[in-house]
Length: 293
Image (tube, one colour):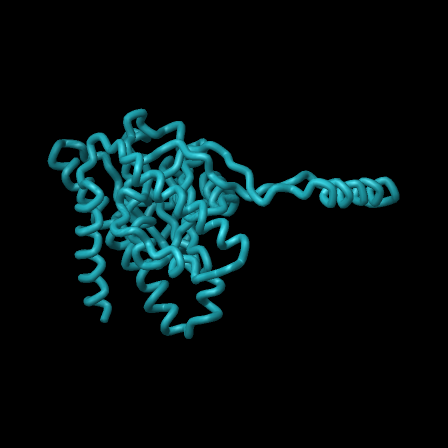
């Protein structure tokens, strides 16, 4: 379900693109009846995105009063277990666009955690084309964001290289972090005796020295814990799962949250503080939910 802004444009334009997935969506799909899934998961996330959109739009309106009218509106769309955000730069500086996108992702991830819906995502920057009728998004940043999102082994939002290049040096809503990424090992491919021999060598190598479950890669990430009030219920977020992969994701996510809350934020010029963000979001969320009901 798209957010239809004032820009029904399908011309390629540079901007920030974010893709976020709900971790554990398949398990929720199996364990919940469709009406319950619609209300507790889909409805909650859609309402959260709308609330984040309103908060970020508040920044846009204030900027317009200061004479900064080049800021574009935030577009978003939800489908299945994914939500995408798109913010074209237009006449705005790319760094200003990234500041708004980072802010939107921070609010969305933090408050989805409050709803026990862990999100994993990535932000990329570049030229995209999009349309509301028919609905489509296409561009290299979409591929970059998708691949980076899928590679992570936690709940959080990484900033891709294309986007990191446009983050303002004083941006206080991001931090450098060693992000857990799915480990991969190159494999021999081909047919014939030589290929079978190499495949056997690969199997022996894995038996002697199994590949690690994850590798840690230093990346810029959205510092969402400071917009998250109170501490998330980790068991509820990760469905009390004992699966090794899920436990790993939960551990990395909780560790990031706890360490960032102890270290403290380096905000610098924020319009809202974390508690104000959370309070404003909940007011908007409860009002939107009441309207739906």
